[in-house]
Image (cartoon, rainbow, N blue to C red; front, side):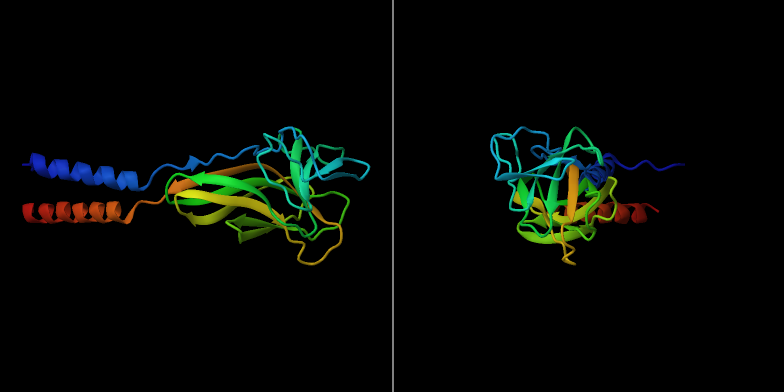
Amino acid sequence: MRHIAPRPARLLAAAVLATLTGATQAEVSIALADAGFESAYSSFAYRGQDGHVTFTYEPTGANVGWAYASGTGVASSYDALSAYEGNSFAFVQNATEKFGQLIEVASTSQVSTSFALALRPGYNSGQVVGIMVDGQQVAAVAATSTQWTLQQVSLGTLSAGTHTFGFRGLNPNHAGDTTAFIDAVKLSASPVPEASSLSLALAGAGLVVAWRRRRT
């Protein structure tokens, strides 16, 4: 005859299952302002032109979202390369300070970013993009193709609260005029279970296992 667990044991098993399920929560998006670099700006530091496209350095405005530093800014689609999405994309030229923005992480999470990356056509290779979190470089990606390639980079575990996130040009080989283009930035978070919740779930699982052993 098949044994049916008494109601208290079944309730305990259900609670443990719910806790363990909750410990692996679904990935969620982290909001970014102007993630595709399409917002209109009201002012800028200066503009450059290479015969194909206009580069707008250090644009500012109410909806720009990003704070751009020297050597960074926004450009638009041109004959050698269209934007990955929309009409505009960001750039980091040579060695730069970062461009970035504040982000909010709801709970302690494993955070990652994805973005489209391309090397500026017709100019020097050698540009490397640093990914920055709270003023520290957490990863670096080389721009090797003059066509858009999707990148996926882990930012590590971030605590709940406000952080800074951004990009900077590194040009580690001092390769002259070398520029990387960035578009379609996304951030996602996978919440990390609190230690107390995980301990409770493991303890409950141990009780269920012990009860089953006694029944058999």
